[in-house]
Image 1 (cartoon, chains in turn red, orange):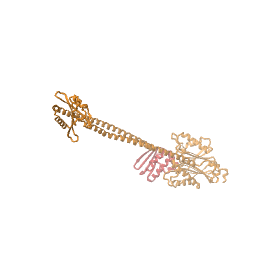
Image 2: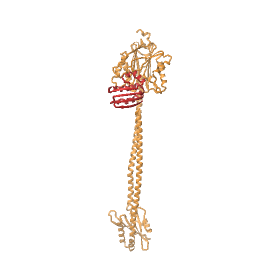
Image 3: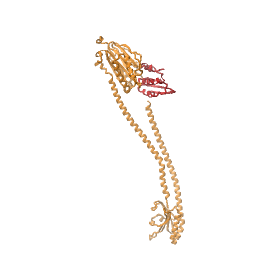
Length: 98
Length: 507
């Protein structure tokens, strides 16, 4: 999985490419956990993301927990497969999907 | 992803820098050596020239001193005025500081009688003194050649008395007939030449110092690089030993986890939890299977019979490894204790969620499906916490259990989970699974998906036992992934409802 970071003032965009699963979730965790100081808007761009496993959901959940306190978190360009995962797991209730 | 690449880049950078430093060292060494040698050669050439000049000068002084004095010496020698002759010699030595002394040696006749006299400068007092030549000068070249030739320089020789290199200019003293009757010898020390030799060595040491320093630096650098590489190799060994240990522990954890899943044979032998359970085998047949991935995962299932009801769950803790295993075992224990008293699947989930949320700082969560099947009536109550929808297979028909999705447990405290209800009839089979089944991936990165579950089941003429169902799906997955490495646990639980048994119906 590739992670592309773009920072614009207090807005951080993480564009993910590939699969967010057990093997790659730690990579995203390293980019997110403890790295969101001063970020008001966190955007995940899923344009080129094929799949999210439960390990990936956990990282999104942790990021959401942090961003709920200090701003907002938005998921963009979520494909239908991943949307299904969010729906079945109930995550669509706690995530902001555009 | 990045850390290993960074390490690689860093080690390559270190190598490149080391190679560059070595190259620079070598280049500096080369140029400094070349410069040192060049300047040395130039200095030596200059020194040679000046030495030659100086020697030529000193030679000229010695020669002219003797040649000028010769007529007077000859006259005084012919007159036999030795004292005056010696005074002349003393004057020459006094006037020429370049000379150490002057020999005056009479030709030795057949009688072998030597008559030699040496006038010299006393180095300590600076005064001029003289002495009789004690040694046999007839063997010396200045004497022999001095008699024969009209002026002769000896090869430089080591003066025993002065312990310095010396050269002597010999000039004959002739009688009226022109015969050489004695020899005058002017001793010229080669002080300067001796001194120059010493200086040359000193200079060489001087210019060698920076070169030696650089070589030492290069050696230190090499030593440092070797130390670092040995260090990293040792570290690597330590790391792989640690890794091995961790793998061993993970293997043990895997086995412990497998042991925590209920043995499905139990249902037929020894279910005596409560009430009618001795007859549970008349109502249900259960098969569970778990194929763990390489790493310890967090999949689990459980079931038991209480009060004529089958309580069962299947779950998946997010992530893998020891953290997932710990959460999984805790969740197993909580399910047992909560479901021992609580009969509503929704409330079971609610209680389990409350425990899972308590102090959850790591963001670990668990998808969970809980079902409660009334063995006598076939009424199935169920609730899902973000878990995949199980299937109900009725002969050739299959449907998914519908529900409003709830969040996985461990995320939001006070989350409500709704009870859903359906009825199963005799011969219906419940098929529960974790995402290791739907998300099994082949080499083309395609997922197995729900479509292939349906296809695999429909390909069978009839499914008569839970074990047959699980074997069928396992085989389908194996064929699909076709050797690709399994990334997630593959966990399935199949429950066949045989229907209300005659003996139980009345209870």
